Image 1: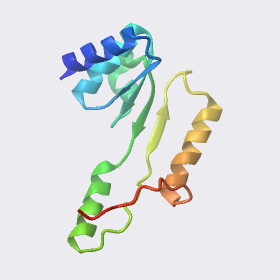
Image 2 (image 1 turned 60 degrees about the vertical axis):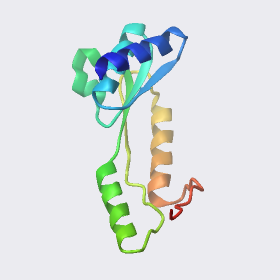
Image 3 (image 1 turned 90 degrees about the horizontal axis):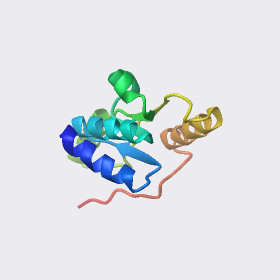
Length: 130
């Protein structure tokens, strides 16, 4: 619901938020538009919102994208076969937009994402069979 996304993000922005993290399809689009109108940064997920929204996406500082569907599919298969190993982390893309993300921050974020992907960084969150 883009209207709900806009109204909710606008109310958060009015309380002096520095940025909006917008997820949820069209609800996110509404939130991203509110962030632009409020002149604060926004982070979109699921797709490159800056590119997808054109001028309306000018407030998007970055987008985070991943391959959630294949990760979920692999986890379901592992559980079905009785081998619920540690869930794997597929590569997540971080797409900076504009000047809001410095080159050094971009490199640091990519190092962290690579660490999750190759296992050198662990979250200490374990999979528990229910």
